[in-house]
Length: 166
Image (cartoon, rainbow, N blue to C red):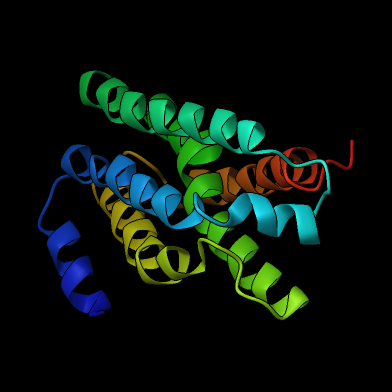
């Protein structure tokens, strides 16, 4: 996979165009996870994790993934973009890379979703983030604040929905 090619394609788009790649790439990620993630989660995270829980989480994720670019298309302002990065994009993309790579390393076995997390998510995250910053829709300071909040949000989400710790 040529990261430079993917990044170059994203760089040639506007931010409002590039965010439409998110639902597509997220859907491909879900397709990779779908056949085996529930069994992986039962074995390594929480014995009570169900396919119903997986589908609920990810169908909602797909719906939000499709709705977010529509909202951004009509309201391309800094508040909307900050919220997109904080509660949608960064947790689903950037921190999901860390989740899949970390889970694979920690348990010594492939965590379903690892391939798309490592191959598609990095150029998507870098490309879309750079477009937002270059178009002044997200400042570097706002990106940093968003990143920290997104990390906390993702940690809470995974600890609750995958590991069922609370």
